[in-house]
Image 1 (cartoon, rainbow, N blue to C red):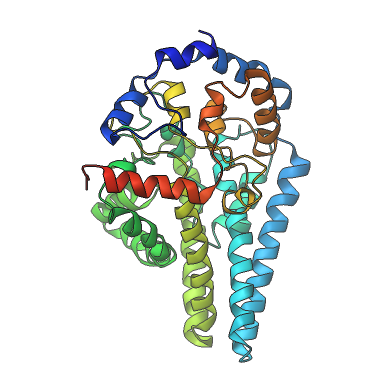
Image 2 (image 1 turned 90 degrees about the horizontal axis):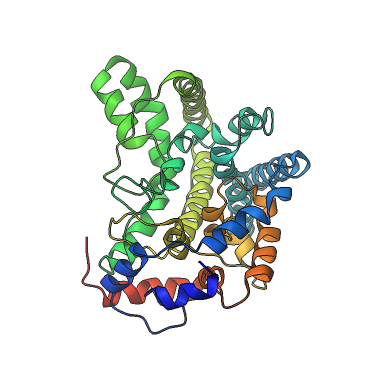
Length: 376
């Protein structure tokens, strides 16, 4: 099927078209036929840039983490010396942005072949995942379900909710709950996981309900097996020992540093939750979708906008493109985008997932909830 034929066959409106009722949009996306020309071009035009480049991954992750921890340490030191609150806030915001970027490499880990970057998973967990109490197992084995053609947008997708079709109050509740994430992670690693060792039903509950970075409250994680189970054991042990050490140090030296660290991680989590609001259009009501349908329900925020690199770093400003090419390393997505846009043209299906920026997308989502019949 030619890309130009797609508009004649699909009843999914372009982003600039007048918005139909949410239920009509959802039905349209669920029934979207495959744009085979786009899928073929995505595969054929990008093979030569599909290798993860260690000279980009390692410095990016390590420098981001180093800057984040450095700014956090300066914020804590300034607070302990009674410094100006404006300086503390500025350092805290910088730390949150840098650590947010470092944390989002967890997304790359879920798609990375085990032999692509030797040692990267281990070092990331040691430097970022365990100190923030968010080891990679919390996303590995979970995010892949979101990319499944038969699970995306359904009740079995851990990362999907029909937010555009829910009641307006659901959006602020969904967003602000992210502020509680670091406290929840601390309680999980310091209390719930150790208790689960001696109380098996609690261990099962924690694993099923509180061991994955998901947004679907109905999702239940399956018990890990084999190599995954071994990885989970060591990462859980590291996170628990770190949580105990942090709490013990805080109990003897004061709680202010921990409070500032929690505030910084909360801000990073809030930023990620806002990004999540615009990662998709959230217009599917549980129907299976084609890859093209998933693409059109997802969002790219490409240049010339500059802020996308800040609130959607590590390639996530090309989230729709990522759903076409899940294994493409983040540093190649910009070039993939340029090639596909040049090859397919500005009237193609590909262009319909490209949006101008964060605020227009948030406005669209809010308007959708205001005009929907309101689930939830």
